[in-house]
Image 1 (tube, helix red, strand yellow):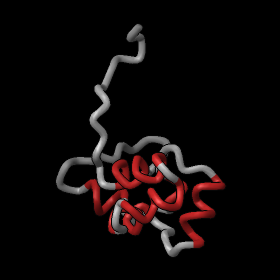
Image 2 (cartoon, helix red, strand yellow; image 1 turned 180 degrees about the vertical axis):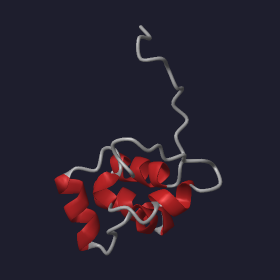
Image 3 (cartoon, rainbow, N blue to C red; image 1 turned 135 degrees about the horizontal axis):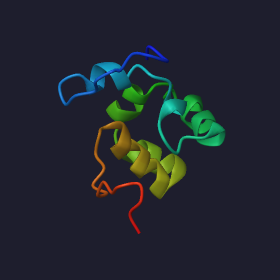
Length: 86
């Protein structure tokens, strides 16, 4: 948040306060088209996406909508791998 020299620590205790107010477009995999669809249905922030029933974005965008809802809620079970992992 305080570029270029400061570091923001995102912890299990503060991630919702930091991330949920952000525009839905700031969520990974939300492009212009997905953001437009979400905004047309009253979802403009990551927090609003997280608070919506999972079925709403899933009905609007299929499987991707459900994944976006999970990501907005901090649910991602993909393993973390080093950058040079093959």
